[in-house]
Image 1: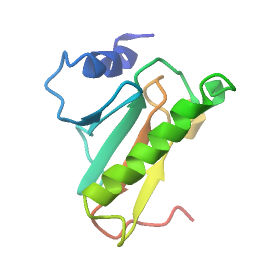
Image 2 (image 1 turned 90 degrees about the vertical axis):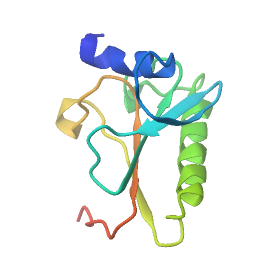
Image 3 (image 1 turned 180 degrees about the horizontal axis):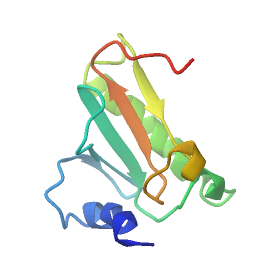
Image 4 (image 1 turned 180 degrees about the vertical axis):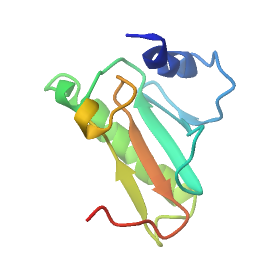
Length: 115
C-alpha cells in the first residue's frame, strides 16, 4: 500500500479529522472529502480488502454488512424514499483510485443515470 491507500486505515483508527458517521467492529462510514452529491458517504471494511476481486468465501459477509450499513445510512439521511446510488469501482480501469475496497453512497439530489 502507498500513502494514498493508507488514508482509510488512518480514518478507521480516528487519526484524521474525517467526520465518521458510523463505525462498528466490521465497517466505518464517513463523509467524502470531495463530495459528488449533497450526500456522499464512503463505507469501508475495517480490515484491508484491496478490491472487489478480493471478496471471497471467508470475507463475503463483510461486503454484505457494508451494503446493509449503506442502506441504513440512506434511511437515516432521509434519502431512501427519493432514491440514492451505491457505487463501487474496481481497479484502475474501473476508476478505483484508492487500493482499498470502498463503497460510495450518493444522494440528496436527482443523480444522472450511468447509461
